Image (cartoon, rainbow, N blue to C red; front, top):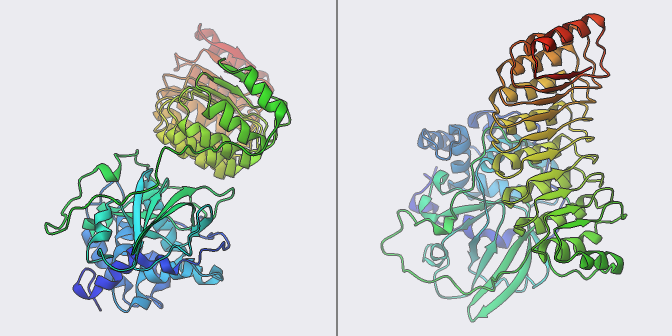
Length: 562
């Protein structure tokens, strides 16, 4: 067995940064199957792989010993799962990162990937808890790759791609050197993760590009033996890799990895400047080729104004190219955009979201009734991680399920400006309510949340109620037209005993009976902040009504409707 980090593993270390040659550069089936796997220890996650990676458990032991005090608030198993990926051993055919990436790059990977499910679940949970990077990173290979990367084409890297935030790492003799045929990729990334604090080789300033990441080839610069190819990460209309629900808190974005001094750099390394790139201030949304004269005129007529109302115009995803460019990106006065009652779908939501990343004026966005599903919710949520001005977002009456709720919830952990969120008339269910509730434990800006018409039952009410115990900013919560019964009412009532900020609660059109009404009544005797409580159209009989009237009489500030 070769010990990771020894001289005999130098070729493997180099391969991890330079194995671009193995990417098929063609579209394969999406990567999936592991999202519902339970999180287990690293030892357990690797058990199904021992037959193909005989030495893996020895390396697991080393990784866990080195990760007893993990950085970035990761667990020991999470940190060690990343370190294990960066470790090298012989033979290469039994080394984890090599076999994993071979499997991911295989056109017939479905059966081959199954033994990896538990490890991928843990590995991805660890990576997704780290903040995404939005900066330029580098990869390279000792070959001329310009014939495989043509300007304007779209390519996908199916394996996890080890990169570096410091180009001098690639230019060292360990990797590419400075002579002979070489290709350096400068990559404008959005979702890569800085893993240097969890790498076996922290001096490499390693940044990991997630599997199934899509890029556009922006340029190719010929400098004799050196080719410099610029790639920009782009988002496909449908996810190419299934992202599991993240367990544990997410880190806020930290300073750019490129701005952090490289630690433990070799004192003999030659200091060089980064190679020239074609990078400039390209905007995410290009001027649209598609034309809609009527829509363009509507936008032009409102130029210089603060509000644009485009509701009910039967706008489609293609029309959103025009809206994103002219109304959002090129407009510096618009504060309110109403796109409700249209048919923009997930693709249209992507156009809007891309423009929203860079917009600094829009405060209200209405996407009510637009056939937006989970993928569209993911695009919008990603924009919320970057946008710093939007305060009100309407996503009601769409097709957002529990997965979409997860994306929105992850964004709420990071966003510090949104105060009002409408998710009514979707299908997030109890699982989606759990994701939203977990976000409420961390979010400190949201004041109004509408979750009505979402098939939320007693379990979902329990999740929301647990969050209300901790949240100190939410003032209005709408849970009407769900499936909350007496048990759910008990959970909510218990939260009302502790919460001191909620002023309006809507529980109408549920399944709350007399027992639930009694729980609520008991809570109202302790709560002194609630001013509006709506319980109409439940199953409350005369006894429950009397309990509620008695409680409300003791609270002179409460308006009770049932």
